[in-house]
Image (cartoon, rainbow, N blue to C red):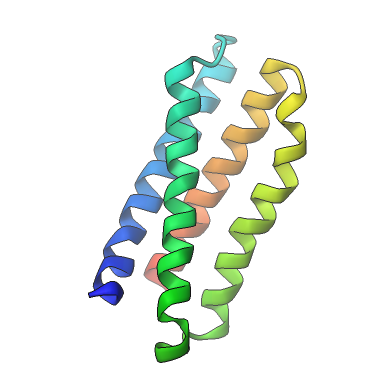
Length: 116
């Protein structure tokens, strides 16, 4: 059951991160301030990654996925750690950095989902 949930949850990770990443970049391009709903959506998209990671760790011992699967998981963590210090920057820069990182995570999640 966890394995099935992990497989299906990957689509939520992909969809939420791509959508929020594009949404943020559109707001940045139009020079509009990020709204409260945007930040909640970004938190939910990143929360989907954490959930996927926890599900993956629950399956790790039993299924021993290939190394590239581990690489994608660690890449998401590295991206998050790299951009978190910028949360105190000015509003536009923070919007750009977090949106670009979220879009990157979504694109890599597509690759991770369809390459395994």
